[in-house]
Length: 468
Image 1 (cartoon, one colour):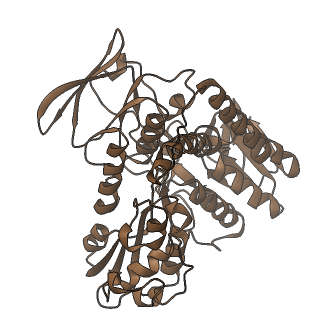
Image 2: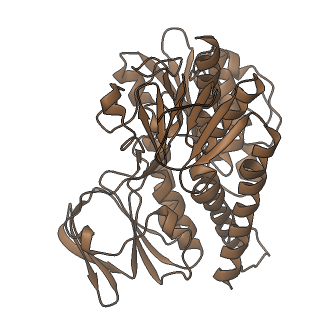
Image 3: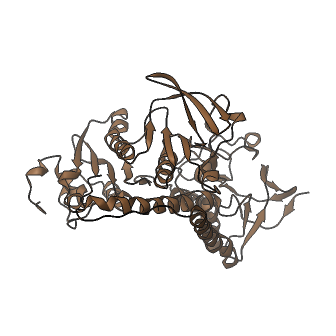
C-alpha cells in the first residue's frame, strides 16, 4: 500500500549528483527522500576520481625521481616498494572522504531522510525495498557503470574493470589494457610507472576525441616511458591461459596473439537506467540507454528529472553535481535555472595532462564553421625551457572571420591547472587578439595561452622574453 510521507522530492542515487541535489533541496526547506543502492557516495569518491588520481599521483612521484636526471649533475631513483601499504593508504583516504563528504553530511540536514534499497519508479512515486512511496517529484541520479565490450571469449575469461584494478591485492607482472580513453590511458600509465609491463590497446587511437597533435604527442611520451601502445586494432578472441590471458587481435600487420598475466577492460561507461521502470512511465532514453533531459534537466515525463552520468549530458563529476543542483531547484521552483555547458573544461590525468575546453578543429569544421588554428610547441614556452621539460603543446581554435575563440587545448604537466583560463576566455566570448593582450605571469605554463593567441598574427619565435 502506498505511503504518503510528505516528501517534496525523492532523489534516486546517492552519489555526487544525488547529494548535490539533496543538499540544494534541503537548503530550500524541502523534505527530501534520498535513496541509495550500493556504497554511499557513488563512483567518484569510492572507485573513480579519488582512488584513481591517488594512484596516478603516486606513480607520478615514481617517475619524477627518474626524470630528475634531465638536469645535469642529478641522479635519483624512486620505486614502488610496498603495494599493500600504498593500497591501504588509498583505501583510508577513500573511507575518510566517504565518511566526511557523504555519510556525516546526512546529520547536518534534518529534512533529508536516507533510505537504502533498489528503487523502481511507479505512477505517482516509487517503490523501494517493497514499499511504495508517493512523492510528487523524482530526480534520477543513478550514475553509470563500466561498459563490457563484445569480445568473443570474454564471458569465460577473468578480467578487471577499473574498480577491480584499483582494489588489486597484488600487482600483476604484465597487463593488457583494452581501451585508450581517459580511464585506460590514466591507469595504463600509472601501472606502468609502478613496475607493471603494460600494453595499451585501442580500436582507433589514443584519446580519439582529442586534438590529434596533442594526443599524438602524448602517445610518443607514453612509448618513451616504456609503455607499449598499439592503435588501430580489432579484437578477435580472448581466452584464459595457465599464466593469465591470451588476446588475439588484428591490425595493419595482420593477426597476432598477445599474452599477459591480467587484462583490464576500459571501454567506457553505460548509464544505470535499466530496472528503474522508465519504459513503463514513458521516460525517453537514447540508443545507449541514457536518460534524455532538456536544459532544465526535465525528462519526457512530467515530474521526473535526471542529472549526472545517467543522462545524455557530460559525464564529469563536477557537471553531475552542477546538474543535480539545477534539477533539484527546477523540480521545486519551476524552470528557473539552466544547465550551463557553454565552457566545460575536461582533463585527462595522464602525465603530461591533456586538458581541453570548447571545440576541436574537427568538431568546429563538422559544425560548418570556418576556423583558423594556432599551435605552440614547448621550445617557444619559457616555462618548459626553464624546467627542461618539453612535454608541452598548446592548440587554439578560432572562428576565421571574427577571431572569436572556439577551443583551447593544452598538453602539459598539470595542464588541468591552466585550462580554466581558457574556459573563462571562452565564457567571456574573447577573441584571440584579446587573449593575446591579457597579462600573464612569466615562467608559467598558462603564459602559453597568450603566446599561442599571439601566434595567430605573428611568429612568436621572433619575440623576446615577456614581449607583447
